[in-house]
Image 1 (cartoon, helix red, strand yellow):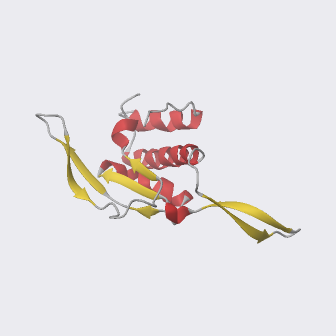
Image 2 (cartoon, rainbow, N blue to C red):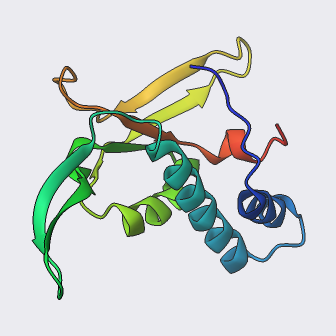
Image 3 (cartoon, rainbow, N blue to C red):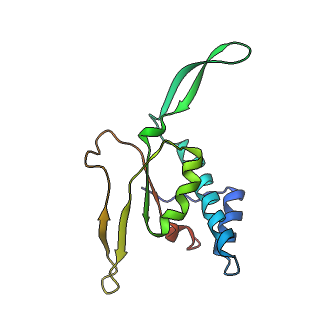
Length: 141
């Protein structure tokens, strides 16, 4: 999957706050949540098969509304760094499922190694997976 650079000014704002070495812990956590919210908002538009139409009754009339099938979304924070981004997505999709993955990099070979895999056993009908890792975010891509 290719990396897409966002031109979202709000995302750039929060990324710069997170990257700044003078940012305090609470503001850093807030920045990560906001980054995740903006990225989720942008990425969900390109995912097909998540919308569900349902009849709703407004104060004026009945209509069909489009909703996100949140339970079909898996959010996968890569431990531990990705955990800080999880609240930003859960605010927007509280019914999204969460599965954790733990990885570390072998310092000699620079290859990733799994130490925790809590992904669902049957992956065939579960889409999409949103992997969360702040390591990529803060590198200044």
